[in-house]
Length: 119
Image 1: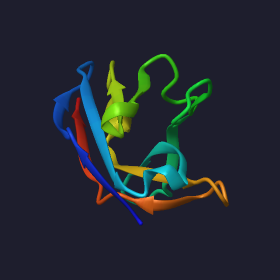
Image 2 (image 1 turned 180 degrees about the vertical axis):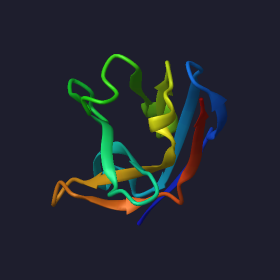
Image 3 (image 1 turned 30 degrees about the horizontal axis):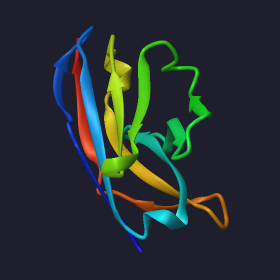
């Protein structure tokens, strides 16, 4: 099992920045990478950024490219999402998820952290 704990959400004005953290514990060696998802009210959950633990590949949704940056700290089993130039449409609950090395699917999820961007 892998446990994920997010932190760093909050309320920010448009144009501001937030940094989300995801701390992983447990059998992290069984995971391939981590991703950040978000879900706004009435919308489907979407993957906004992802990275392998080993590095060399990152994914960003078109809507966040150039504004969000995903980084990792292997020693701390942590991954971060730096969010700059935030827009009201970035308002959502953000979830950290871990990707299984076997199935390559996201099977472990954190509890989510609310990000609210005011206009």
